Image (cartoon, rainbow, N blue to C red; front, side, top):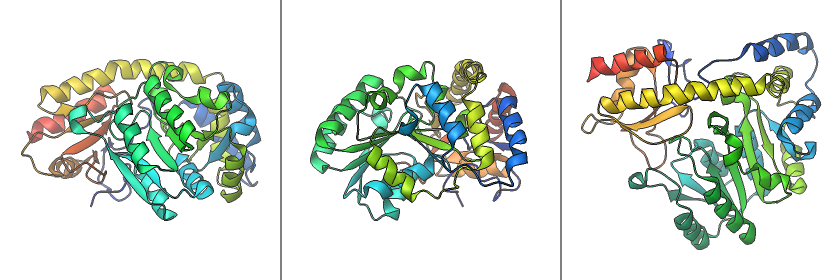
Length: 355
């Protein structure tokens, strides 16, 4: 059985190498580990419900007002809180896209319409066609992911701004998930966070330290929005202690003086390893789509059969992400994280043994 998300090493006990999760290939940095270890002295206390130290550090790093920030048990919690706070009559999600957008809408009985990203267009988001779709559907809420999950496709900022300008004039609330943007060179050039800094409402920008600092086990996501009424409704619905003592300590450290050097080292690593891994898969006959995140999205060689590669890799102790449960995709599509040259080589050896 294919898990809803990657990382199910618990249900697949024989996994030796996990390519199914998109976390930083350099692993958890020592300064984050030290912060988490130091926080153990405080686990006998309840977490700070306001996340004061974390809030101050994040606001200083992003040059935003502390009041624009909201924290949660991963970005997924904030997705659910946003839907709960807004209760839109209708929403739009691109397809394929991160599954929790659709799940959150369904949890609150919000009808969702799906904008199809086309294979022949490289699964890119065409702004003009998307705006025509919004004009027809007239949703009250949309979800966008940049870079996209699972494809890794990066939408240029000018296109994002065009979409968000349209949403602003039509009163459509936009959730823009930028959880993978730190893996891109010059992330600030692609982010839409300036709109929040400018006080524009109707927008929630999501980020997380989960992927960036390889700490999915502690769960910490955060969002930016200038609409205080929406933020207050989200906070009112949030379980008050959802961000643990350890998560807050890790988060505060993530916005400390060692942040930028670690992120630049990560980007330089990906700048080297991502093209290598991609070319090696292409050389073996796979179709790899152009992306910008810390993972590759590819299509199996025609005629192999849906899901076969997933099962074969799992039998060999390697867990990859089948994209069969993404709307608009099937078992021919897969996603693998970019790892070290040695780790990537193990996957390529597995491929060579199968084809």
